Length: 336
Image (cartoon, rainbow, N blue to C red; front, side, top):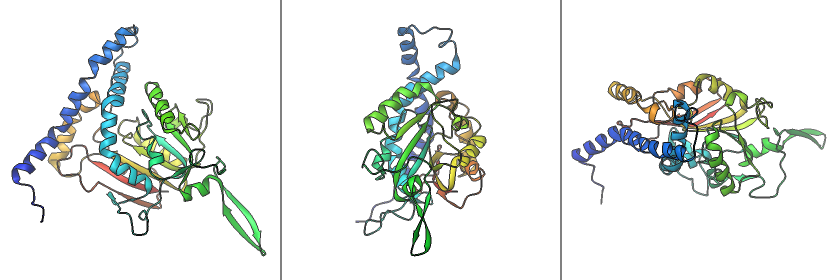
């Protein structure tokens, strides 16, 4: 029996709910402010350094809200898109249905050296195992070099052949050799460490407690990520709040190898109509205060496109998002 289309009343109710959704989300965030202040008082935190420091208080408030409520909610709502994205099963903003015979669609999943930007409380740590990629040191005992993987030459019947080894081979076989989780906020590190331990990924997942611009500076942290050494960059709902997004996008582009892939799932500036753009800008007058500096109106897709020359771009707005989506998204893969 064919499904009946929704009535005008139903469509109107859905639109009103969607348009009011950001305000409900901000009220939920506000509900976490009093408990945050109470915990600070109970811990006898110095008033001059925390309660009277708006930036520090906002950071602690948002960390509490995100780790306890917003993060798990976002994970539940976005997981059905993020998992296929990291498996290489999206195209044009839509999830590609698995092909007969076990195929995963046309794209490549994450592999090799992965740079997760805005790791936060570790919301997506276990997804790296769930996407079906084998992880060195976790899923098997094979030895892959954890350097930038390279090419070895071998002689066979007088013909010199080039053999891909190390992380370069891993990137094409769906094997993750190393994940660097970029998270400069100290308030998130305990949550992130617990997520890594729970997923059993201590051998492969390493926290980089610095900003993107300091990843290659071995004096700023006890590690180093060289430019041009990363197979995959992953940004999931984080570029909305980083400072200087254009500069950061260029930095991330520089870390990617030639042929490396940037997997993106981000909310972006509304482009549906002038009235939705105006409404989104109005909501954004209040949204950053309640959501830790998050900006609704960033043209993130355009920013990544301008970061450098791309060999291939396969991105789009998720097809299920309606016209009244105040927080629309872009999803897909940029290939260097």
